[in-house]
Length: 625
Image 1 (cartoon, rainbow, N blue to C red):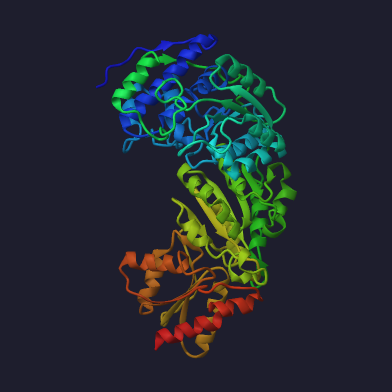
Image 2 (image 1 turned 180 degrees about the vertical axis):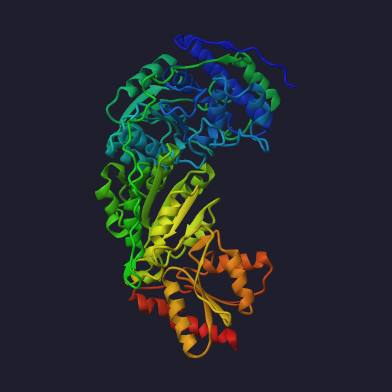
């Protein structure tokens, strides 16, 4: 068992003691990375003074109550500086020195190479650069407009990530919504991974760009503790978002690494680490507790009791687009005060405009900024809200890294992509989501849902509000007949079998628009005396293995899958993976969009892709020969 070390509480009002704390943060960043044999000590050392001042004197946080709604939020957009963050956690007393030295970057331990919410003091996973600040915008939106609490959101950014477009999307939206509760601190240490950054120490250019986006820029010597204290005080009193541009030196504190190239992502060898620690004055075990949240700031405003959620209902046979049903169901779900909607300036196509009209205080227009759209949803989910973010299916590909990172964050977000597939018609391939099912299925822990009619769409929207993780709803542009009554239930991992008999000799599988074509093909086959089972595979992930394997066994392994998607990663892949895992042999005809589509009518494009009723019936006949 490790020998306990004695801790010395410091007085954060004493700037000399804050300077000592900064040295400890540098030493511990070196010790942790050298012990682990990997990590980013020099990127941590550059920002140690900033964090010492912030945590000791400005971050209002009850470290014993990380779930206190009045706590400020600290987000490391510069996630590779995790040694610094974990050194802070040691300094405030929530991580032991033993854990820091034996748990950093080790298998099965919580001090991972980049921060994740496995730690209760971490809101979101970071490490993919350009994401922490956009996520912080979502947290700040919650603070100003929903929680209405005076907490601040502090973000540590690296200068290399300032070339990411997502950073500027974030600053643009922070300015638009006047998020004066948001402060970004950029660690301008001049050096990136392979050498100097684009702007180096040109703080004037950084400042002009920040101001051009409507935020306030404050430049400061990032190693001057007194100046940092003044700037952070000034930032807290600003009436608009602030970006603190802190001029620092990478590897600061040790003459062997300060402003030296070639040290990015390299731990110091043991002998050099020993020299660096000695130059910094040796190991310390200082403990600091900065300001607590105001005692009267921990209460959200009294909320109105939720009204009963009354989902829309649709008469059988009426033609309603699933995107229209999505907007109507989401609006009904807005009776729950925790439900929030976001859109990327296509609300009159996704029909989130219905929600915006009914619940304007819980609707956020993010405009054409899909990365920020997803990031804001992640930030809102970190505050316990139930966000639904909507745009065209194809445009989520622009935000895929944010969706992937949301899975790592275990964020509970709901995404809805409309206008999917060749079914959208004359707009052409740039607007056709043909990769989205594969993209969303690949996200860790995701659920992928694809309703075929308005009734199922409404029920699946209601279901999504209760799902953990990333869930995705694919909706269709065109209006198709309602086939399910109001009493039908839908589950993640379920399916429907709208046509079946004991005499079925083949199974037709579709979802969305192709489900309707499977039904039409089944009618054509029935007229020829060929009974066909039809499966509505509305849950693409998780997939209904039991129903698929039962159908395969009942119909001699003959399956026809039709999907308005490229062949890779969609319905066909899900069906083959399910049957293979169950050990059920199948003969599969897989109809998918295999050629690059162009413009045309929906009927023309579905036929050209070979996924309409005629082609489904023809594929079934071929399998039956």
